[in-house]
Image 1 (spheres, chains in turn green, red):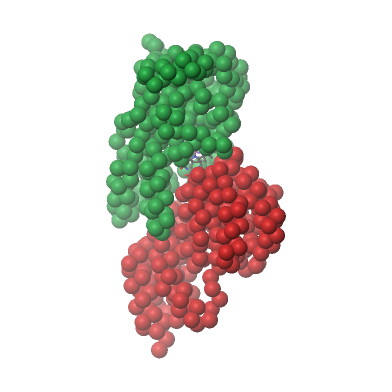
Image 2 (cartoon, each protein chain N blue to C red; image 1 turned 60 degrees about the vertical axis):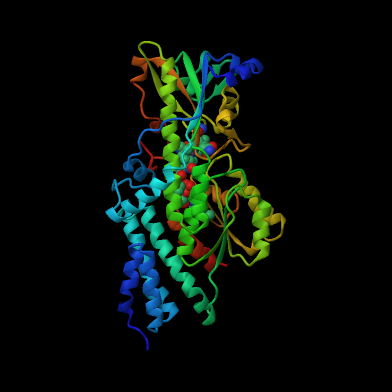
Length: 242
Length: 216
Ligand code: B1M
């Protein structure tokens, strides 16, 4: 547990209930495969663009990657109570279908990650200069990086797994039958501000390229039967559907 | 001397390929050779963009290709605009665009701006997290035909309604047409909050804007 966290633990009853917590100021992202960016750009049916376009995209991607500052924070809690539509961590009851989705987990990690503000500033300035194409590609790199940061943070959360346990899928407020208003309950449970992620009144996070959520620590055999979270989403035409 | 129409094929080709420098050169050459600005639009830009739209619908082109083509036509319009004004043509419609208060999403709105500019509209982009007062100030500052509102979350969608109400309270709602869009927005919602139009995609927002201007 980091020093910074220990001080908050003393002040904050909710965090005191955490089994473990960590602040990761520098997450190492997996290498970026061009196909990932093509997916964010919507090359759904075709898979990849024609060579001249692929070249244009690669140039912008290379520039954008220099602006990523991936970091994150998490805290692991025992589940103190659950129903099909709620989950109690410490003294906080989070409502939504996660009670059902995380039914096999006896511990749950709450987390927040970000790709940093820099990538959004870069995209914004390209747009201001009338270069919507570069802005779009930079934005896609930021979206990829936020997801990749969440993947990277999960490697740290994994260290808290016991034998024969596995992480469940990740669930985020605003998705999966959990209202985005649940962000307000999630944020006091972790040290998101320590990595520069803050909640604004509309329940969005700043920086834009950030993700918050919950992930369960559950017996392996229960986890292997989980489906894609997209099965729960009605946006069937979405290019990000998995 | 009027230039025969087929000579604009180089321009059409450059636009379809999203080759910005070649598009600008082709437009300059055509104008120097005596093609009328209005013909550059009707025989060059319009059929080229129609082809780009068709390739998009057929799944041959994607958003990046659309944006490159829109960028090419935008640059041609920069050359054409003063010539059209000289010739006494009506100025292109002016659209004020922004992501509503409380929302930080940028890219969808940027795509709409780029496509509208490629469609010949003049666009003022107010950015993200735009309060109603800023939209109103922009409309009071200069003639505006359309105000476009973007929102990406169910929690920020209500700010579209607040913004429309603020226009009403300021007594200028009837001066403008309001179009809305963004992932959670539907045409039903647009109707409920009293917007004049909704478009699902940036590409479709150009047609919508044209229809709204025609109804002005
Ligand atoms: C004026 O006239 C017009 C006309 C047309 C207009 C218009 C105006 N404005 C837009 N349009 C239209 O034209 C554009 C081009 O055709 C389109 O614009 P869009 O902006 O819609 O499209 C963009 C060009 C590309 N689309 C996008 O960039 C958004 C795509 C989806 C998949 C998405 C992504 C990629 C991301 N996300 Co998130 N994300 C989703 C999205 C689901 C979806 N399929 O839309 C959405 C928006 N996200 C959601 C959520 C919940 C969240 N996301 C989050 C995070 C992320 C990523 C970082 C992983 C990533 C990037 C975020 C970003 N946008 O920068 C979180 C919030 C981030 C924050 N800062 O607070 C988080 C809150 C999750 C969490 N707890 O961490 C959902 C919102 C649900 C709600 N209740 O409102 C969501 C709809 C997904 C879902 N299936 O439920 C049209 O809408």
